[in-house]
Length: 305
Image (cartoon, rainbow, N blue to C red; front, side, top):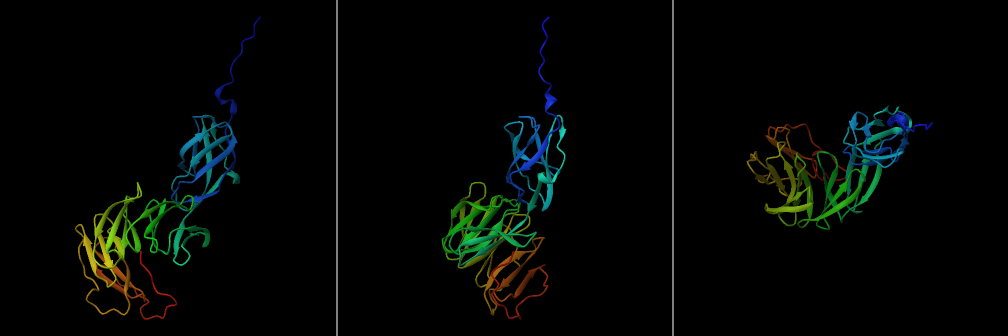
């Protein structure tokens, strides 16, 4: 009598387990590719979760190996779990992944940017960019940092997931600062030597417009609704774009030190200007909370965000 043969049921692999992950840290902006090793994975039918958030671009190549890209998450340590029709892997120390928020500091003389782990206040990476980096702007989703390189007339684009430069964009002469629109679609670069502002599409990392603004632009501020922009020049003169309201400037004042930066108020109905000695000038509904104008500083103030 012939004995019938039956294929093993789909759940023969059992509940999946995670024995290791290829990297245990990544940016709060997401974008870190993580290779997960374990057992019981199902090709084409496996989900990966970072804490409570679903991983991106999950790809399982075998019953023991999957990869997934980390999502954007606040700074915290979470478990990377794998789920199939048979269940979800039990959490262990081996599956823990920490989302790290970085602060990016331009090192003018060395042509580098330091990525500082804000949880430990230590330098996690030193990234080579262009000549004389000056201003840095980070996209709202935290995925990229844009660095204005004053000496090479370029903007370096840093992936915060890998802390490496992924693109270099040629802009005007002597770029000083970068401001990112609230929707993250554009970076505005003040070209101090050219008297222009370059508009960079963050999708393509190309310059889509160059706006003439007058002599010595050094800072750009975007209103919270993303509709308007202010540009401040060396003397504290203010140029407005769109329907941005003009609230005043230091252009007619005798300043002790030059203006080096500006920022808008949360409602977009005012702005602050800062000078190299730390003097603060308020306009519109911006409140004055103090300044370092009367203090002796070791180094000058170089900007405001």
